Image (cartoon, rainbow, N blue to C red; front, side, top):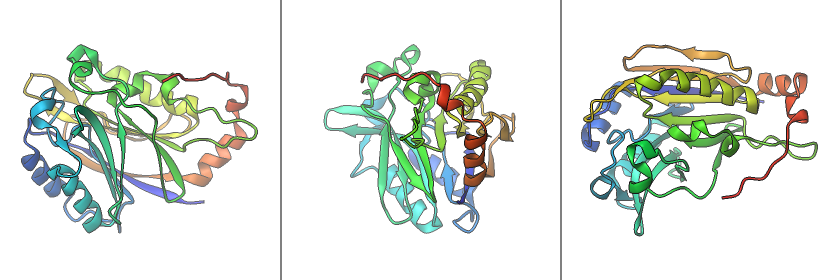
Length: 267
């Protein structure tokens, strides 16, 4: 059994300015490396803010300077880096969460639930599948912002002959301050119902549309109790530890999954 050190990066973002955001993040991260953490989590659309200008801001994965920067940061710091960016793929655009490992591997998840109140469903394509990655013996489900509101998409269904699909749910966001209470509540609810850790990273500051973001980045344990909870609307780096043995012990002690309803998700 292992532990997973996870660093939450809560920051303000420069509007539609990838180079400035990458410079800001490098300064904020400082000398943080694999000696200190295993995983660095950046907010949703960390290079641009939550822009609907996908036609101008999205780049192909192969030539994206932001994706190249993320991969290089993972390599030089010696730990996994993750965050979402606007990506163009063929004739479609995606809000894509990138998982970059120190050895250069890239895994991605395309946001499934698109925030129609901002017109995201008109500017980006819907992701076709869930994605689970593995790090130090932990399996993590990748999600982006609005996904958090949809428990059926996120619910795992272990059975007597089926293992838990994931041990932690990771959600990166640009979640506005007026809806901060649902953000906090949903992070805890997803942890409780899935018997897993939840990592939620949100931005702070105000975007070009005048929307304010309160942060509330949190690390929640499998009982829904916060391990990191700093309700401050200022940038910070905080590192918490996920304990695989403690999770396994709790799942054995409190096997609520054995009484759960079974269902199928149609995509």
